[in-house]
Figure 1 (cartoon, rainbow, N blue to C red):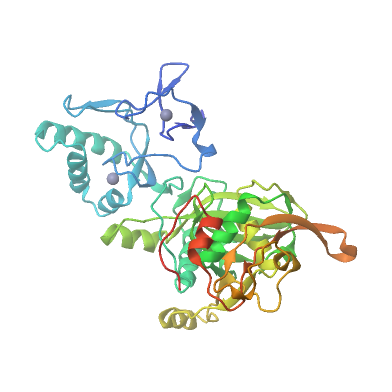
Figure 2 (figure 1 turned 90 degrees about the horizontal axis):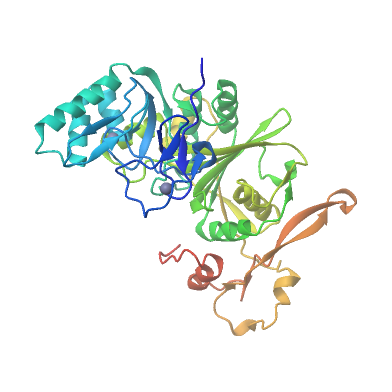
Length: 431
Ligand SMILES: [Zn+2]
Ligand SMILES: [Zn+2]
């Protein structure tokens, strides 16, 4: 059996590329409007985001890859100019998948006709129907979750976290495939078991700002057990962080280290049955990148796990105030029914710095003194500090993660936002 060549996408516009001739040259899909740049092919496995569309209806948030009949090239309706090079693997959005699962293939055709503006071309509808049938009649059972779709963000609250964790564990135990390094059943079972016993951490808005800002400048970090706030864990930031737009990360103990996984939220913007089904079958999180690390592993500062590592470090150095969240009664009941202890969600906020101001914060020039009526951020930096037995080890400590101004004064959010995430202005109020 000849392995299929790896799918390529353009590094500039992130669009999957079609092939022409042998040996293949890579071209943009004909219907794609580009700024005229030449395609820069890279294997899709090297990209966090691939700008795919549903091959059935053109929806920009495809969710599943289905394998079916080989459909090489089809042109429909000169007026519409729809020319596409289909292969054996098609991307399906959550809505088309719902219709296909329920045996309503004509609804999928309706979506395509509408999306491509072919309502006035009955012969085009017929062609699309033939095309879909050619693919679906030869469909191979099963499907693979697409994890490179850049969904609009979905906010996950602290109260929802046990449910989010449980759905993710169930997805790992289920039959829907993953194309990443998490493809093997053994790994998936292991991650599911790790999630069952995971400590749950919800990072509030200010702490998320701080963690993202600090992660951008993170130096190399030596991984060790005492860095982590729990043996196994799932941590959710209150919004997507880093250029990879990850919203959650998990760590799972293995025989010789940890399995770290980053997650993005999925399903943002969906509603009705497709959303319900996605939440039921997958949940809220899709695993993106994954890495295995071991004790004393040196992780580069620009590693995909930098946001998780920076958040661990900030918690470990007591920049955090950790409280326990109220968990929904329904969730507590569900747990009780299955003899599981009630889940505990820890909320991570920036520590209210009473009596523990580090000297670096006190000695900052131009200390506003007691007349200040609000606190504001001073931009910080990492410094490697000795710790451990004989102070022989080095670990980055974030300097000035604390606030300037009186301990009990409110945090001035406008200042926080300007200093901590100037690239992403926010205006919403925090409580
Ligand atoms: Zn391109
Ligand atoms: Zn679709």
